[in-house]
Image 1 (spheres, rainbow, N blue to C red):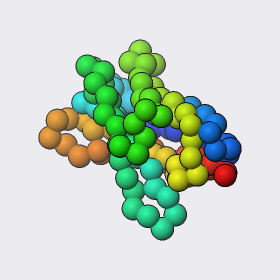
Image 2 (tube, rainbow, N blue to C red):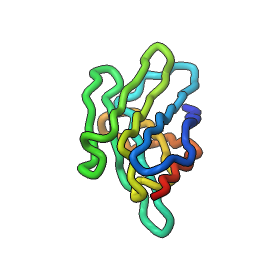
Image 3 (cartoon, helix red, strand yellow):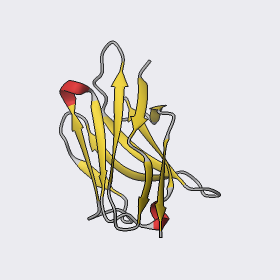
Length: 119
């Protein structure tokens, strides 16, 4: 069972930056991909970005393209989300998740970290 721990959330003014981290622990860790999702109050959880763990290919929601960058450190079993030019609409709880195989769903989730962007 993979354990995921997010960190790096906080309060920032519009236009500012934050860097989220997601550290994975477990006996062996070689997922198909990892992703970031977010959920704002009163809204459904939405996809933000994903990265293929071994290949490094990246995917982004249109709403964050050009502002957010997903990356990973395979040796440290850690994924990152660099968030620049933050907007109040980016305010949400951000979750990291693991997709263990090509045909699987995202099947392990972190506890979430709050990101609040003030206007």
